[in-house]
Image (tube, rainbow, N blue to C red; front, side, top):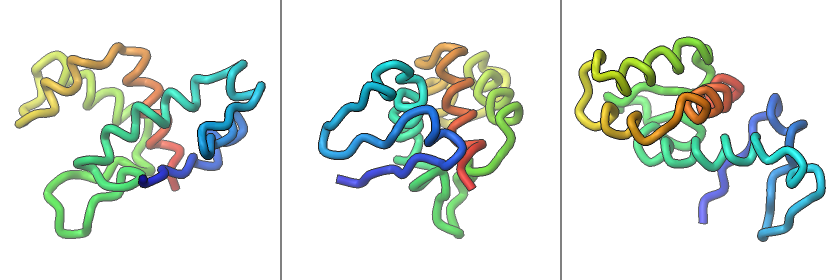
Length: 109
């Protein structure tokens, strides 16, 4: 099983969970864990931590600004940005989820 490391900027919100262990801190504020888990779905196409192979036509997500990522996802969701599958994928996320995922990838350095 591949484990996606948590960006340092979000690590303070919740500790990475290893072997199913949970901490009181993570249970009190699970937003960073949810963002990490939701962002993990993006890695199937966009590569580990949002870094696809160098020769990939799929864009990197890591380190892009949160506002840029949110804007693009909202455009996919609205159908105003051309896509092969992203328009359908984006429709499955709420605005809150899109913002959290964008924050996750913006924090990856």
